[in-house]
Image (tube, rainbow, N blue to C red; front, side, top):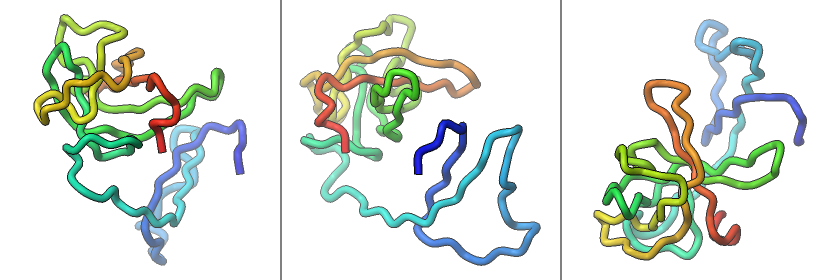
Length: 143
């Protein structure tokens, strides 16, 4: 069920009974935490092959920077309802010459991808890792 509350959801293939000292707390720093038992089927084939529908675990990268890495999760902006694909900064940005609008390919350039699939939208450096998001040119690309 959708709510307006901020939360972190952890997805597990199977929940187990744990002793109290091994369980996650219900809240961390005022943010609700929810563990869901959800089965997933991994994508078939190689993650480096071109795919019609993109999903986490596939090869993506910044064409200009010639950087390749792994695609992360799909998220939705609660304000605009736009859907984004996430990955690490080094995968979608990759260097000082990066800019908003850089072409992102799937598979990534070092996996011989050369056709732009989407454009880099923005990036956040809220921690030492940072993350980057991209907005597909066609929302039907996302699973």
